[in-house]
Image 1 (cartoon, protein in one colour):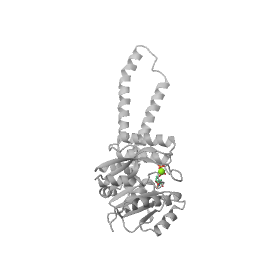
Image 2: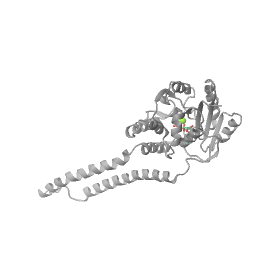
Image 3: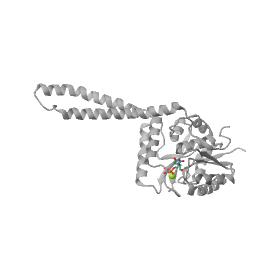
Image 4: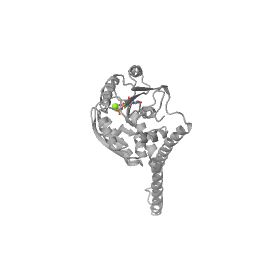
Length: 313
Ligand code: UDP
Ligand code: MG
């Protein structure tokens, strides 16, 4: 039996959302008349989601659970889903139903027209705090400006990806993952479909500011050297200023001015340059830490239960 659609939903404490997720996804997917599977990746839930996933899978062969040994984070959970997906088209969706499953049909239309990546663009977002909206908007624009691949604005992981692209993604085993960037980097024919992002059905966000910041850092370091170059720019600016300052101060001294005397100027410049140097070291550290993580070569995730067959087998 060949499977056309694989739907991947990462789940971290979404106990209340699982029944509605199943109900809406199965309704939408049944209407396609194609074979499909739903891969539920349990990312170390502790609220009973795991049992609920098992119960669902027990009576429903189309549900394939991948259960992590602990919380590995959203991007890794989706990665595991991509590894196990067997479909010709793979859809990544949030388990909290913020991405309406009905939109999958629109994504599938574009896929049938020949696009290999169909990403859903958030034209509106419901029920989110101004802080979340503001930081998310800043995040997308910053990434767009400083990274080398053009990652579409206001686009999350909700998308349909063709098997060809997923096979390439699965071969990219970098551990600090930013999947949207990876799928943009791979190329192929890509197109966006607008949708209205709904409010969460139940529960609270699992993406607090700290996790968003980490994702932003992964996106930036994974796709740009810009932060490393900033140190060089600062160096040139500081050295340039010093070269300009030397003759100015010499002339002022010769004409008997006391303008540049005393501790204050020295202290300010030492603190300023010290600060710039420490920040540059920190930036270097971000990259080196990531290199270290890659070198260790640990598996991306550890599963306690998973289906027998992986995708592409
Ligand atoms: N999620 C996950 N692991 C995590 C954090 C989140 O699997 O460590 C899942 C979560 O259950 C949801 C999806 O990722 O299905 C998106 O998370 P969330 O809705 O909390 O993010 P937001 O929509 O608020 O950005
Ligand atoms: Mg959400």
